[in-house]
Length: 368
Ligand code: UDP
Image (cartoon, protein in one colour):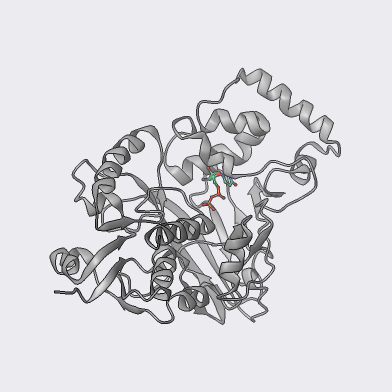
């Protein structure tokens, strides 16, 4: 007997929503379920004081891929927001990512050649040749002084691990420039959906049957019966009942405040790299959409270790976890009726454009 759906998509985040849209455009019967009470995964925004508050941390869309940019812009228009956070260190503000503005603020140097000599001397003193971990990679990129000021404390708070025990790939996300250019991302296309991320997700899921507050794990047997193929976007280790042990994630706690004043910090994000300050950043949400509301909403972000029952945010792609991942990935490979996708199911530190690319690629393979 025919099953009621071709695809059951577990998780209404970005991967699930893109995948569902692609398949339903091809006439497939899709059902999307999510255990949260809303769709959108970590992109979800809540309107507070007329401001779209990024409830699961700041999301700034950026890509170099024109096809991905055209894809999202065909669903909702994007504004021209460019991410340029600041770092607050010992009562002074510095520009990020590391660029001539930052170097000028630290060393009063206007010359890239001079800055390169300062940094090279610090690298030489450290004795690092081929970086083997995040700490060494960071020193190789910006020298030991900037590492100590802006990276060590932030990283060790963010990940709950020594920078020496983390992979170099994490710090390679951040550009270093010898020009006066404060754009956090190098990508050609950047912005925020006008009206917030919910507009993007709603457009993706427009014609699709969605049920929230439905937990796949509450009745797996039933859910396996109702669709030919399951698209799973949750935690890979949970799917396999943690049989090889659990993969580690970093979680976050958000402390949100409505302030009875128009502006708080005059910029969307200020990072706090000092280890003595328990949060990593303060987000002032109105700036993502150039808001002019009379009040403002801010969020302090406190990293914490993931425990069962809390939200998983960041996969920790260190050696230990990647070995466990290998075992789960082998099981996943053998599945004929299950597709895994997204940050949690692929256990990858994906940005949004990479999640979309993965969902498009996986849906297109099926159409061949
Ligand atoms: N990082 C840092 N200092 C900063 C910002 C970032 O040391 O002020 C490091 C930290 O290890 C962080 C990584 O760079 O985890 C990647 O930063 P990104 O801004 O990409 O993190 P996300 O926005 O994804 O949390």
